[in-house]
Amino acid sequence: MVKRRVHVAAAAIISRDSRRVLIARRPSNVDQGGLWEFPGGKLAPYETGFEALKRELHEELGVEIQRAQPLIRVHHEYPDKHILLDVWQILAFAGEPFGREGQAVRWVAMDELHSYPFPAANLPILRAVMLPTEYLISDEEEDDEVFLTKLGRALREDGIRLVQLRAKNLEPDAYLVRAEKALGLCREYDARLLLNGEPELLQSIDADGVHLTSERLMSLERRPLAESKWLSASTHDRVQLDQAARIGCDFVTLSPLRTTPSHPEVDPLGWHDFQQLVETAAMPVFALGGMTRHDANHARAVGAQGIASIRDFWK
Ligand SMILES: Nc1nc2c([nH]c(=O)n2[C@@H]2O[C@H](COP(=O)(O)OP(=O)(O)OP(=O)(O)O)[C@@H](O)[C@H]2O)c(=O)[nH]1
Ligand SMILES: [Mg+2]
Image (cartoon, rainbow, N blue to C red; front, side, top):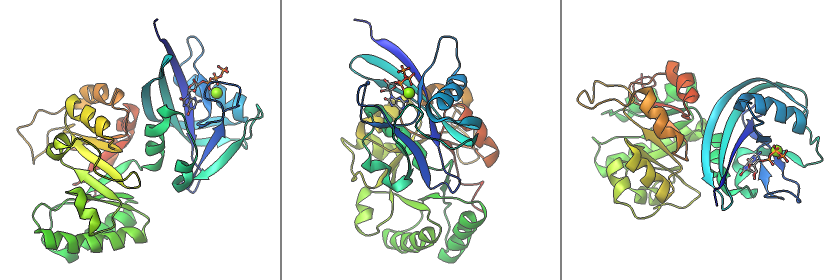
């Protein structure tokens, strides 16, 4: 039997304060009935994803989309069909959403999303909704005070909400001291802190998760962390992306997009190859390597969650 291919456009409508997202419950008599979903539906013949999105949100919720941006594309194999979920983040809309087809509709706080049952294909979407578009990787820094000043500036002035503490130059004890201080500062801004290193670090510091080097990623048989923590990893090619998906990473960086002064000998991916790799990654991917904030929109347009950078945020 040839599986049906179904192309669906769906919407992540985020509240103005960025804290809540709108979800709807599928009627009990349809496919995946009773589960919660992001409003949307199948593309009609010759429709683009964005056209379908506009039509579906009008039909299902009575709202008119004014501005939207791609969030993530998810390919998923159900037993009876291959589905492509083309998910958009709605930046501006007119009207008050309500269930025009009688379905339950609810604004849900980001940190409560996990308590709602969603279809199997939705896991990457939930992660994408919860993550920002910028991922700060901290620079090597000798002095803790200088480090904290720079981190504070990025949180305050650049609005950074996702931080990776990378400090290969520090001895293990010094790393823990810095991590404790960084965590305190991140908490003040409601930002998440991931430790670059071994998962066991979380036993000493209750940070939000761990970032794995690609080498460490490739050595693992399974996810080394609880689901309640974030797991990210560095990737550079399809094999590493597949491994990240296999062990259940929540998101990854993919690099180098451009040649950088720190790795002049490595061939950059460029946007074309990057887009090809991201398309089937099935998790949020941050573009890394010579990225600045000016690249964030382009990164989103080719399917990325956004950009990861040291230099553009570490000043
Ligand atoms: N809208 C939406 N569909 C999803 C999500 N996750 C997911 O697996 N799907 C699947 O994608 C398909 C979407 O179809 P749909 O039933 O919404 O399509 P539609 O609005 O055009 O309805 P219709 O076919 O009854 O006219 C279903 O098979 C559904 O199970 C999601 O978050 N939102
Ligand atoms: Mg629908």
